[in-house]
Amino acid sequence: MITVYGRRNSSSVQLVMWAIHELGLEHERLDYGHGHAATNTDAYLSMNPMGRVPALVDGPVSLFESAAILRYLAAQYGDEDFWPSNPERRAELDKWAEWGKNTFTEAVLDIFVYDVRLDPQTRDPAVLHDAAQKVSGLARLLEDRIGTGPFLSSDTLTFADIACGHILYRYFNLDWPRPELPNLKSYYERLKKRSAFSEHVMVSYEDLRGSY
Ligand SMILES: N[C@@H](CCC(=O)N[C@@H](CS)C(=O)NCC(=O)O)C(=O)O
Image (cartoon, rainbow, N blue to C red; front, side):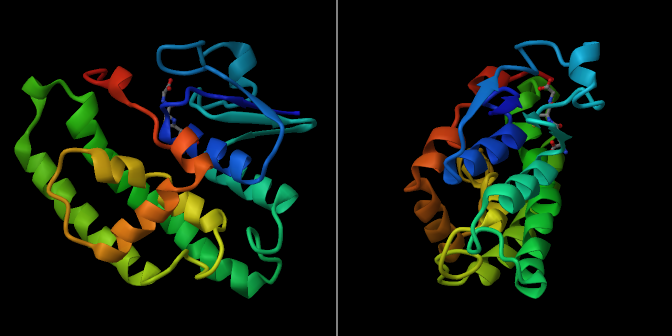
């Protein structure tokens, strides 16, 4: 049985939970992190020495870092479509998975911090301007890569869609001047139709408002 430690309004936890549900894995999720059980205990730090969420335990396997967890789940439980065994085919997707989880997600989270986590009194509009410029440029890359899709692999959803797509709920719901990108919008609409996405990624972040 897989155990996930982490609150459902964390984007890193959402990435893991989306993957678990796409793969149909038996699991439990326990609420840890901001506003929930503490992550600075010895027991928790033995699973994730960063004291962050998520952590995952699957029998003898104990992991932290959501992208590493995603790749583990994909390699252990995914089929050939979700996690291609051919190194070239997988690497073509993995470069976008890496970019999605690091470059793109981190940039979107700068807008998240501005729009949601900061007290409105402390916001500097110049910060939003710079973050919006950056995210817009990155989103245009994803727009071109997706094209008419339907997914990054072109026909079926893979681990790379989860790494890139898990942050799109925030991308499309935060208050910022989004560029018009029709391919990205259609891709998001396709993801929204998946029950694993709507249940585990489209999660309210209102509890995090003003929490910096
Ligand atoms: N790179 C890490 C980031 C982990 C991280 O920063 N998690 C945030 C939530 S997204 C966290 O633990 N926040 C503090 C808390 O919830 O106590 C990963 O992808 O797992």
